[in-house]
Length: 302
Image (cartoon, rainbow, N blue to C red; front, side, top):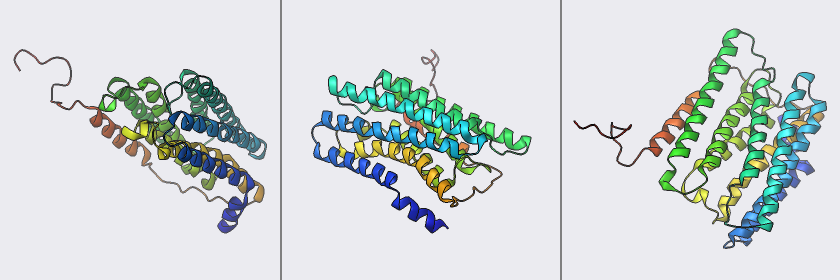
């Protein structure tokens, strides 16, 4: 049965089209090497149809899903619409007023991105999760709170102390990093809880999308520079992965195939991983000559 799943996915024209569009974008990134403005324009141009595919795919899944999950798919579709509007504006802006080449969107694009990400997170947190006992509910929300706090700490770190003193829009980067990390947690919960709205085969690409987006948002150095074709390709990859999720779910549902059931565990490794990442970021942000006196000026006796 799993072989039938993969055969159907590999033959699907919509998934092939999304992959071809992403490949075309990567080819343009290579052809425009040395012309960062054209690379940025190609990057935002490729984002728009991928965003639209996410919204359309989620909306098509809504009538196919059980009634208890239809609000989930409606909110994912709204997120796709929000991403499409924001990235469309950014694409037009890069054509009319290119300015300094940047992979970070402006205020308008960031606002639409934040709205879409919030919609995704809320959709993942509020759908019926099949948690049977009060303990399971308590553990779930404790895990969610841990990741939310960790994301907030990382956002604060980037806002007050940019890596290597880099001059970037740290407010937008901080908001983005916090949102995508929380989204990664939420999407992973979708894949692991007892009664998820998506099969694992469809959920894991969206988990990978949020994870890649979160990592590339706060990695220092070349990952934040619009100078290399591979940077553009990596930053475009999450849009392909998240757009593929609803389409994979539709193929599995319409074909009557199985996507695998999530195994139940008495605990989740996600909060522990989030705490570890938070500590790594926190120590990376410490001043070079840090000591035990981290707050305020040294005392007269020291």
